[in-house]
Image (cartoon, rainbow, N blue to C red; front, side, top):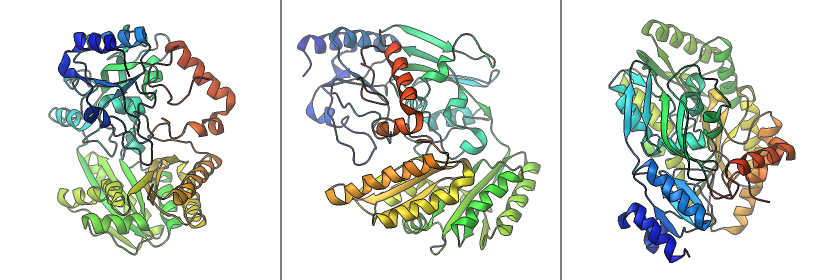
Length: 462
């Protein structure tokens, strides 16, 4: 319970309507999109309207030693926004303005509560594109996306969120407001603090304004579906496409379990008996798109695709990508709990990783569906389970351990886009070693010595 004077000061700064204390309100902020994660109710939820109000709230929290958990839409998949120590949830959904689209400098300036799709819709009016596109693009906020350094379907060709963040306005743990970066293409003044705060999961500061890089929208695009009767063949096709110097905008894979589930969900015409399908899109100038599409089609056939379908128009294209984006909601309907993981390996190791996942599923008697961003090696093995079954959940946790051990053994990493949060903290030593984790703690303690910003995430106080 917060002291009465804390609530009174918050109301004085924000107004009573922006300070929530009712049980029903608090309960909705006790969890995020992460499955099988214990809920933790905050003591209060606050919704500031400006950077100045954020700074005032941080100063109140510091004065009374109240933990702060900054939150956007709550689509996080590693427990990153769960208020595990109670305290205060700081909702950024009122800070939702697109402040500027600057065509001369190819930038946009936005507040953290802006929905990613809203930014792209606005950029599209000017013939521009913001490439990062996580699966929750229609609901996730820019602040959350920057804090998690989210990826998405276009990561292979265009990169991920960190490649498009040019400047940040931040409120630090002591309530001071500062800016780093800006609109200039070149900026090597001091440490790269924009990069440090991108992907920091709200543990080092609170983002209140973001400058992003935009690019000209591609002139043309062409999508295709390649069907394989063997996962290894699909893996070889991925490598062959890149080896032939074609970098698709998107190159996605769905395994058989995912294919069957998605097809029953959206009826997109996916072949139910396929061992794997690759969804590929090339984009750019019309002449380049035509040449690359022909080359990709030839490579797919040479590497063993038993069927190839080219989308004839935007309607067919949209249906193909609807199938891909429906993977998680489709799987979520099979059983009460879907444990969606985020193991990333070098793309040449995708066949090895897929084989390992199948073996792990058999060993632990679990159903695991795998889909993901084949072109950049970011796979999403998804365990379909029921968190009410304690014995099965023990097997789920053992399987997750083995999945990450395998990813690291193959030269991969713990996370390509979901972050560490609570869910993956225990694995950090395996990737970084004790010295690496100690360095992370020193950075945390330099910027947030009281561990008030999103405490209990990435690193914990000793």
